[in-house]
Amino acid sequence: MLRNIPVRSICLLAILGFAPAFAATDRDTLYQVSTIDALMAGVADGAMPIKELTKHGNIGVGTFEGLDGEMILVDGKVYRVNSLGKVDRMPADALTPFAQVSWFDKDKTIPVQTALDLAGLEKMLDAASPSQNYPVFFRVEGTFPYIKTRAVPKQSKPYPGLGEVAGKQAVFEARDMEGTLVGLRTPAYTKGLSVPGYHMHFLSRDRAFGGHVLALEMTAGIVYVDDTSRYEVVLPLNLAYANADLARDRSAAIAKAEKDTGVTPKEADALP
Image 1 (cartoon, rainbow, N blue to C red):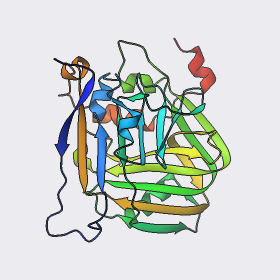
Image 2 (image 1 turned 180 degrees about the vertical axis):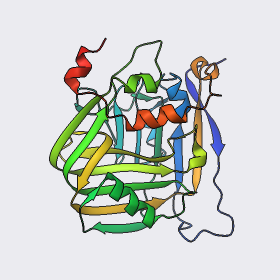
Image 3 (image 1 turned 90 degrees about the vertical axis):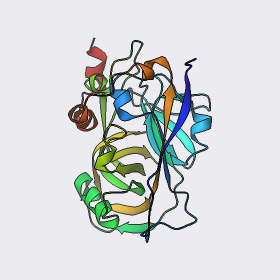
Image 4 (image 1 turned 60 degrees about the vertical axis):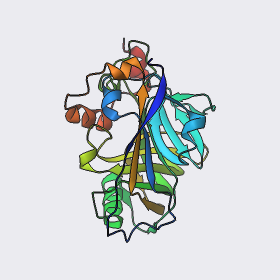
């Protein structure tokens, strides 16, 4: 009988004979609920409560049931930025349809000594972890003269796909912020499971601003990197996932949804 609970499916990235970047004592696992293609197909029922998710990591990104905003997991605490820009600490019984988390054990520490934009930060991270064949989690503590984020609005059943919802996302801009940026880079071969490349969420130090990062300027701070060697995916055991069409290549739609600059909150309110 299919019910709205997750079933565990394990996908292992093994390091055979060569693992200089990974300490034996590290808890290096990218733990993921559902897949990005399922989210694009409208599979947005909650598949796992936050109290279970945080047993598998203290840093990460994701969303909430019905695509209700952006998830930022930092220091074991789960926050949501909704489409009005409001930041809330989420309760243990809140549900997620998609999340990517890990226990953060930093392998590298890099001071930021020159001004960076988003492309420059990604270049710095690529230099710190040059192999594109492993997932990498990162945490950035810094000063941001400018940052641009987005959040998607909560949806009702039947849930539309993330690509459709992203067209109604709200975009927020802030200046002279201090805060934490968390995220990950996943390899190209994870297409369909994850968003290949970089996925970053931001939370201000005062916990009053955040969201999915679209652009930034950074002048000072520290970048922490955790190279990750294992990948575990937990698939939803429900009818929406079982019946979803996951055979299509949604790469172009995913790239657009992740990079789309969206609309302002006032414009989003006026949309049907």
